[in-house]
Each structure stands twice: as structure tokens, then as C-alpha cells.
Image (tube, rainbow, N blue to C red; front, side):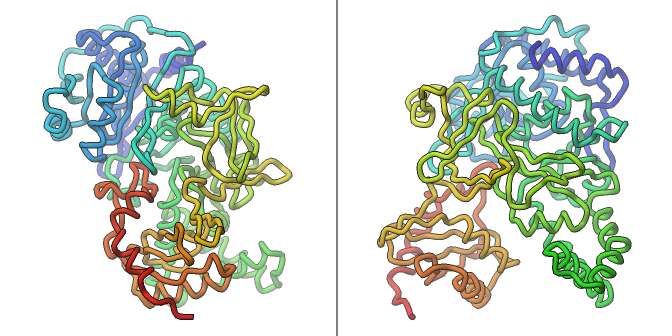
Length: 559
């Protein structure tokens, strides 16, 4: 049975049960399964009238909403290929992706997006419509039969974030998606095993990202209530009001939440701050098996009076776990939420692996989670280490190729006697229990003039832990005799220097930072220095700040 058939059959059994909701004024406005299926039918009728045929591409360029999800499902139900794109991305980048996948239709979230695309592409622009046009006509009487294509046919083309060059269209088949939905549903069943009600899932990440899209489909497959945050400026207010059991996160948000709690406790006054700080120190000592009787008492006090209050204020009492992906999470932050009684379950994967390769084991509310690691490989996925500790992956989750770029696919897909292996480009390590850790990215390695190879990510992460006001840290030093540093955010040169001194004491000589430059404005998607999902575009950053980087190396280094 195809994953689409499973989803539609599940929705048809739910009737007046809510399946999707949008947060408005701090309240979830719910859409029942019956109402949602009616929207899907209306979108399918529009696509039929527009002449969209099986196998053709339809670009979906809209922010998160119930209507956007209905159109997404409708495109696939018509046998067409959905191509999700990020509404905040630069029009020039969007135009390049649209021209690459040659869609018959572009569905935009609003008229501003449509105008931007038409202006950018001019006479080459395909037909562009907005969501409200799709739902402006009369409701369809029925959806008609699902157009179920072969399992090896593409279900979606998801464009990579393009950290070191142009974005590539990753082709994911129905078989890829179906396998992944089985894996995610099984893990969430384990997480929610002792809870009798349907899951409530809060969701704020853009649905054009593979992991976000997979979670959305998993919720529909399982019949969960998916609650969408439409306004990221209201994220802190909406999180507790959604009363979610779990939700998907990126490390950046969890880091911000941890720092926000510290700031709020400082504002509350000396007594609250003292209890919070003592309880936290005591918990960490107990975790390291160095606790005293006094620590035992402090931990019990804060677990009764302080930590539950923090957890309830941020997330509500319903929260079972936080799920985190996109990039490695700072181990200290994962341990912090563990202290609050909130397990953080990490996942690791790439768009090319249908978003996921590993997942932390949720058994016993994350009892088997190893902080700093991203869990074991999912079912049907095999992982091993290649040259330079590169992670190699094979299994039912591996993509079928890049759209229009077979030569690019050939660079990362290697056929051996034992099967087809995907070269992830990520460096990793695995412990005796099969829990993986991501330690760097091969393309990001800094090759120094003296021949030393330096993975920048661990050092950058350590620096940011010492610089609460900083937004980003980027190491440079290819071909140079020492490392230098770019730092963005509201932080002083003296604070950067102090942080560098602290980190340098932990490093061998060739990993020590000798110069730094402060950039006041953070890198952003709009400046084309971050990818759509917030990752550093290192090559673009190096080019943009070439003069500043060269100036650091022109200065004399003091001993």
C-alpha cells in the first residue's frame, strides 16, 4: 500500500476529529479531517482544471498553513511531483530552481511572492497562482481516485540548501518516503506508548525542508493533531498554548531558550537565581557521580519547585520530548533540557537520505539517549565509516539522484559489490552501542599551510558557548599558518578576546586562534550568507569578507 493511500485512509476514519490547526491569537484554530479532505478535493479539482498531469512538477512556494498542506497532498494525489521551496529565499535563487525543475505551475503563498517571481523570471515564468485562487471556487463534491504511480517514481524534488554552491534538486521516490514514514511512525509510537490520547504536535519549521515535510506526513499518517505556528515572532507565546506532546526543533532555538531562561532567572531576583544556580550545579555534580548529601537536597528542591515551573512556562505540562535535527546540538544544551525533565531526541540525516539516517531511542522517555550523539541507524539503513571518517550510508532511504544532474549524483553514489553507498560528506564516529556522533563536514575542513587538517565546527561551537551575545562564529585559515576568526552579534572585542583565550588553552598549537574580527550584523538568508535552513555558506562568507580576512593575516601576530 502506498504512503498516500495510508494517509487518505487514515484521514477518512477520523471524521470530525481535528487533524490540522493554525495558531491565531494564542489559540489553535482547528480543521477537522472531514474539512481538510474537502480542501484537498478542492485543490485537486483546481489542478485538474489547470491541466496538471501525472509526473509533471508543481512548485509550492508558500509559508506554513492548512491550505498549503492541502495543496501539497493534492499535488501528490494527482500523481504530480511536489517541489517545495522556501518563501524567504532570494528571488534569484528561487528563479534558478524553478528553471531547473521546469514546473507546469507555481503555487505562491500570496500576491507579493507571485509578483516577485514573475518580475525575476519575466517571459520565462511558468503560470503562477496564489493559494486563495485555488480555494476561491466552489467546493469539490469528491476527490476522485488517487493517482498512484509506481513506487520508484518521484514523489518530490527537494532542493538542497547549497552551502558550497548552487542548490541541487534531490529526487525522493514514493518508496523512499513510504519507508521513512514507517520508521518515524514506529519511533513516535514508542514515545507515546503509554498515552491514550492522539498526539498533539507543535510545528514551526518551514515545510519545504525534508525533515519538516516528513514529520507533517507522519502526523497525517498517524492521525495526530498538527498545530502550525504561523508567526515566528509569537513562537515563545504559542509553544505553551499549543500543549504539544513533542515537536521538531533546530539547535539554534534550543540554545536561545536555554540562554533565555538564564536571563529571566537573573531578572526574577537574587533568591530565585540562587535556588536555580544551586540546583543546577548540584544536578550536574550528581550526574557526574560527585554529588553530596547537600546536592541531593538541592536537586530534590529544584525538581519540585523550580525546574517544573520553567518547563511549564516554556512548553506546558504535556511535553514528552523535544526532537532536534538539522545540525548537531551542543551537548551542554542537551544535558540542560535533560535536567529540566525534557529529553531531547536527536535525529541526523540529509535531504539525500530522505531527511533521516539515525534517531535517538525514545524508549522510557529518552532513558537510552546519549548526550552529544544522534542515536543509532534507523531500520533499513546501514552506516559505516569511510576515508577521513566520512559517513557512508545505504538503504531504502537513499535518494534516486539529482534532478537533471546525473554527473553530480555519480560523485556521491558509489556502487560496490555490497550495494549502492551514499557519501554523506559528514565526518562521524560511532560507539560500541551503535550511537553515532557528527564531528564535522569534509568540505568545511581547513587545510593549514603546515599540513594540519582542522574541523572548524567543534571549535566554533565551543567559542559560541563562551560568547552568549554572539550569533555566529566562523573560523578561517586555509593555506595559512594560523587560524583566524569572524564573529557576529552584540559582543565586544574584549569579550571575544577572553573567549578565544579560554578556548585556546584547550587546543593544540595548530588549532589555536591568533586573530579575530567582529562583524556587527549577523549573517542572514537575505544577505545570501546563510542557507534557507540557517547553515553557514562558508564560501560566500569568505568571499564577502575577503578584505577583512586578509587584513587579519597582514597584521603581525604577537606571541
